Length: 423
Image (cartoon, rainbow, N blue to C red):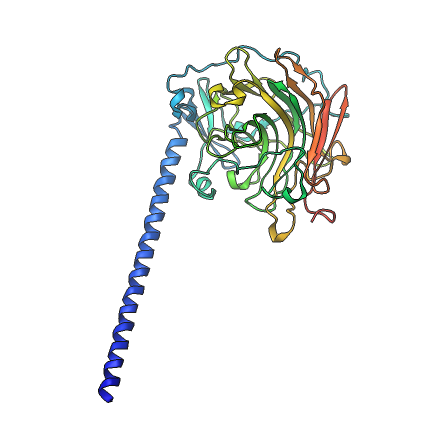
């Protein structure tokens, strides 16, 4: 009896020892796997940074912490694209749209003259002709993304689809909009002057932007989109500054396209304006108002989509081969604001759109788009016909259109997000 208890005890001890070694081996394996996966990620990040950050001819430190690299125009990220290996850079468009509002003769608002706007990095230097300014991507920028592959990309299904405000779908994608739009014709470009603010963002994974969308195709998996405007995106840039941005996709944000120059696609020709760099100054409530003009149009000769910022900065172009539907024309134009509502604490976000104030508050308080126009098949800028508006929840963010001689077709938009009527 005593021997049996003794041998049972030994067996139990051996089993415990075996179990201990298995656990220890498991922990070692997990720790090794963790280390391997961390070093694999580190390698992936380094490779991606090397791909994005081309060797600079000159480097400028911006007051906001950005590093701007002056990169030779033919070494920019666009030329990593296999179809652009032998591409001859087009330094200027063949044709400009006719009939642009003369910015110098126009007042920018009631009793308000247009205030000049610049980028913060200009305070510390400039890039020479033959180079382009590229905002340097840092390791922490890439690490904030859900994966190296998704860095610099919008989430799938973030496009405002008018008339689809089914209450069950309102926050399906977590994106909310307040926009004006036109559809039903062939469009070859769009223009607007956009009031610039610095909206407050509640969560780092949310953003607030104001932009033009040039859209082609259906709202399915093959949607083509060219986008340009200003945004505040802590996730993408690591701060709350208002920044100039562009975006493109030819498959509804799935695999193609990106923000700014964070993949090969957009070809920049301008040496003065950096994509993704901070815009300064920004508007203040009941104080000075600042706005930026953005024009996106299709060159009738080459078919590339060009972008102009302000009155004279032609920034560059998206080659037409990047797109399917937009290789021919756009079927819809949208102007307005977009925010991400991640519903923190199960409530609507308090991330602001535009100035964070509703449209009815008007000039100096609410954000606006003015002189909105479309480019027709004759390459003329025209007033939009049949302008519609769309917002998922007007008690969170709203839009109101108007028309007058100075501002042409315009609208006020935006809102505070969470408030007693929006929870």
